[in-house]
Length: 213
Length: 372
Image (cartoon, rainbow over all chains, first blue to last red; front, side, top):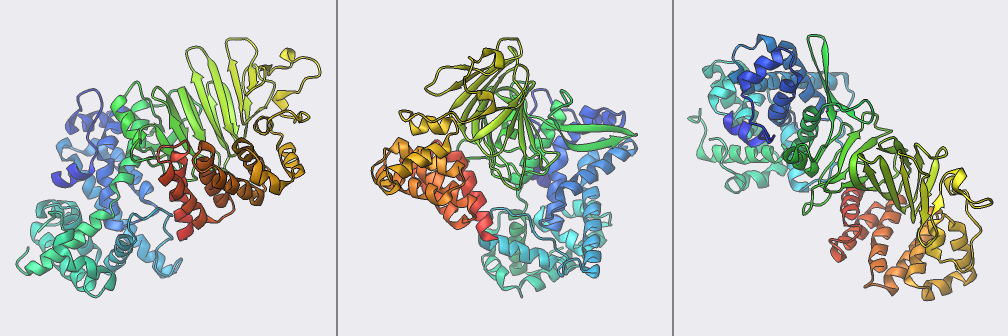
């Protein structure tokens, strides 16, 4: 989680020394809006990255991120270990992503759109091949069970270690390991049948940047 | 965990993980968070012009995060936000990778470049009526009129309503003075000392102060004009109403465009006749003709003038600007591929030119539209 956090979370860059998580949680529980804002500044990118990694491009990403923090601040007084704040937020983001995935499946059933995917907001693609491959990857992930999908996302995309994956999924280490292995196998099996992912898989070592093993 | 997976499997998993990470879009996430964290850090300074970037509730109390950029007070955070601030409903990205600080590019193509000492607040809570408050300092603005959005810029008690134009707006908070320099188009200004909604056109400057004294409206090459009724000589043009004065034959076309006398420019060009003008008019006249045609919604004529300007004066500032303006015209006509090509051409020819920020924004915008 530290690796994932350090990669995605913005460092505090204010003029004053940053307050620790324990202190921030305590202050937020007392209604200190500045503390809430500081928590947001410190961890919004982490939460957003977990959600994005889990869901891919999603027009509701902003709302989902805010929703995680809303839930956090509603229950912040119940947090006993402020030092666990990043893990708590990751867990909440995973839960929220799971809810969003379930909503997508419901949407697919009621057929608002055939693929249950809303049209993407237009952005300038940095690389059309990468963008296409990403779309394929997330369509593929939609065919993986949510728990296995999240295990793959947390481990292989966000680089968490197994203990962190287990904590985020609220599973035992053994159950998390099983979910991860099954998820990875399923993802590989599906990915190897996707022509658009072929170049990326064939160039595995080239695209690797030292991620999880 | 890895016992049932081969090295080949792990290599492919690493590749898929890297692919997934490529989609995390850290830059955009950082932009979004930077905007909201600034909002949190600055808090609401007053009740107007500040956005609710997000709202948190705790024990029934609402905590608001206002999107706010405050350079002097928090230089490090300001830098982060200057790279990219993302008010809700808008995507804001660095206008140019080389000089991102202080440049804001909104999803509709509008750009706001803040000076080194400027502080602004962006309120996009109402997507159709975005507002920017100039807390202090000078900003350079180019508004793209799309989707019927009504942009308003607040400088102290002065409101500048925009419908697609370019201008520099300065607010001296300590002295209570506002200064507006119009580079393109027309805006309406309301505020203390002004007689209702005062149009200010391309080439004009407006200076006003809440401390007293009459607002001064100046047209390039003309004597300053009092903007208030009391200051104007009898029978003079009501600059604040924006009526066209009778075009003088000796007046330059650029001056006429500055006064909004577009029809006069088009009429004089036709009298030469037009084909002769396109082959013999000066670069200044062709630029003015192009502007007059664009403002009059005569894109075909604008293209002819700008093409002539580009072809006959390729190594001049006007000739280079014509490339950008051709892009602007093509984009307004919905010819997005052409627009993207023109913008790209401009960036090649003038990477640090007058319109480089707008061209970069335009290229991205037009490419995205063309890809739809």
